[in-house]
Image (cartoon, rainbow, N blue to C red; front, side, top):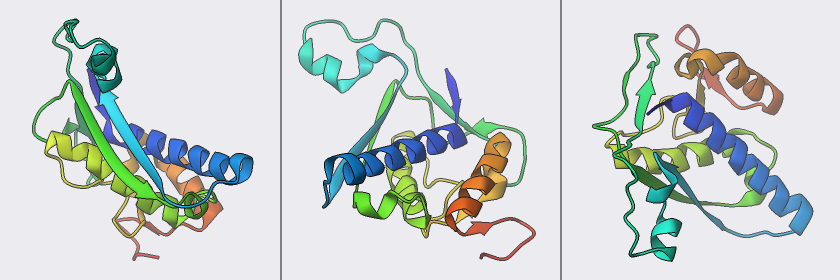
Length: 166
């Protein structure tokens, strides 16, 4: 099974923003939120299933997820990291109030969370977002226009190969 890196980044950012808005607007929660993201080739590999059914064989088949990246140079797709995994998890902490409006704070939190996930693949960093929360538009591949709208709508800084960091 293959999945694009930008798709993981986009979904993580969307989930974090939803979680932050829910915490702020619906529950009135504040303080540090601890998050976990997982990528599983088969639901039987998920740690919750393994805890509930410790004696059941976990691998229904030898499914693995490979993360692909187009790269910021627009080259052909390539494997992001060392090798495909059956199950990987990343963790990060954030302040929901900082992420609810979707700006550079959300971009930074997304980078931290997804980078933690990608480490399981021996992949360092997220090409789509810098550690400072700057969107690297060239690395978003087919989601580049969506990333541009995100940046424009929230004032999130961007970087393209033909411009300086904003």
